[in-house]
Length: 395
Ligand code: APR
Ligand code: PHB
Image (cartoon, rainbow, N blue to C red; front, side):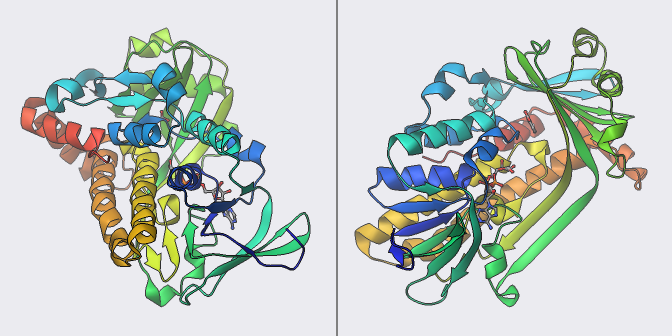
């Protein structure tokens, strides 16, 4: 690209997380050109540790995009999960209740598959793009400026897809009075540990104990991913592996808690819990997708799945725009996404409410007991939980 000359493409995608990369692949398969601008290096993006439960709808979209070969051979299909309440485990048989399953396959692996597919199809991704700025969003031809290797560059386009996460530039580029936001920050976080040992549990276990929440998950037949609820002001330095596994055992209960032992952690990090939704998800020529528009607490395993449904709807809207030259699919994008996002927000809030220890709300424990007793006694309540956990079909 000659310095100073403004390049041109159909879609500029800001952010090479799962949302941006998947949108790039879906558009490429439709013959729509897109350039992805990513602030970080490819190695950094590839190495990020995130969640890993995929709804069937997400698996279908990844297959549709042509990036599900490894997922289909290495993903772990789960027909249920467990809730451990006060040391007693209750199985939620997803397949029996709603005829659907979820697949355990790390977001890190999804990102790797998408990055490889993008290189293989020769589509353009600019990593280490600094100072990305969006221009003329409410005009007829938006454009983006950025710096790469110290050189200022510009790209003109038809539309911009803001897939740059919660702290990205896209949402910030929309005038505040054009947006409505809803936010809830929870008074605790999740301390997560990754360890290379075979998981002694075959399905995920979500635990509500008097000492707080815990989650027994996995990444593969040889790698576990476990979490305990922690105070946000308790620095990670206070959490030795021994302390983590001792706390985990006390919460997850005997059996799996004893079998896991105290393996060395290969990754350990704290994530704050928050709910965040912004609307509308379109401002002129800019469309927000994924974490750029919404955050859910991880308790419902919806973060990645919502990002996938957003970009699936956005790729359909852009495909139909270029086919029919009608604005209608683009005008409907935001409402279509928000219907699904609100359902997932509510479900993630419910799961978080029922399974965590709320230090400043002693009453909540009694209400949790009522809600969970009702759940364990009622097939209808379990079916509703299962329906929300497996998610709505997409393709
Ligand atoms: N310029 C360019 N790239 C940016 C900028 C910027 N100003 N700001 C952020 N980015 C990049 C980030 O470096 C990151 O790679 O945008 C990408 C956003 O990716 P994610 O945060 O992973 O968001 P998204 O693709 O929407 O994926 C959502 O990630 O956090 C999980 O639970 C969440 O699973 C969900 C998924
Ligand atoms: C994970 O495996 O990291 C995971 C699984 C389920 C959740 C959250 C995280 O609800």
